[in-house]
Amino acid sequence: MKKRLRVGVFDSGIGGISVLKECVRIAPDAKYYYLGDNGRAPYGSRSEEEIARFTREALSVFRRKKVDVAVIACNTATAVAADEMRKEFTFPVIGVEPAVKPAAKNAKNILVLATERTAKSAKLKMLLGRFPDCDFRVFACMELAGAIEKYFSSQEPFLLSAHLPRGRYDGVVLGCTHYSFFAKEISKFYSAPVYDGNTGVAKRLAQILKLIMLGRSAHFLSTEKTNNCFSFSAKTSVKFIGKWRNINKSVYLRTFVLEKDEKK
Ligand code: DGL
Image (cartoon, rainbow, N blue to C red; front, side, top):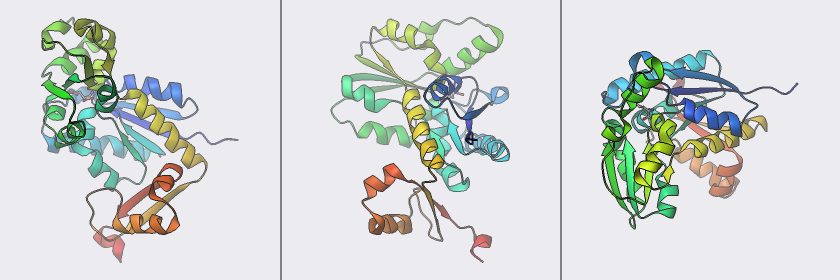
């Protein structure tokens, strides 16, 4: 019988369900666990330490559920903690980032809506820096994710337009998974196409699940401290095995830094 791979999907609250929907559509054979930290949502204005701690707790739940892959379906937690989590957990961790790339393909004057923490993040700054031909306005919607969370949990009404900045844009990036539930309304408000990263995440998930099913993954253990998930030893190894790009597409690579007691 074909093994059903397990996938944990996590968000501060209900926002990640908009990602889960795409994952189920594109990778329907996996077994999904969804964890919404509804009791502590929203995360958007919390400290980085808190967001990292909550994310770690969520992924620890997934570890106990023996997931094969975890999806951080939260832009805020991805911006703050995804890199750290990739070093701590042995299963692949996929994050969601504001869909700046597809927006930049089609638009020039782009509005990026996000939570405060995502808007201020170094990750977003770096991402925007990759598209010097576009004009970006990043707007932190301070209360919007919380209002959407309440709307779904206790049917508390809210005025969407009161949370959105005015202006003319030819593309709008939804940099928070909660906003995706109102994609149509936001697109209508600006008379512009909206972009979210949900389909991209689901496609990446399907790709990783396929590689796991094929048994094509390689883990590199290293004692080297590294800032990204590909250590020097992994990069050097793949240089000898084959071209970096091809290998990266056809084998799922992870590298881990051994902790002190593991080195013995
Ligand atoms: N849905 C989350 C995001 O994508 C978090 C929203 C929040 O909790 O503030 O950023």
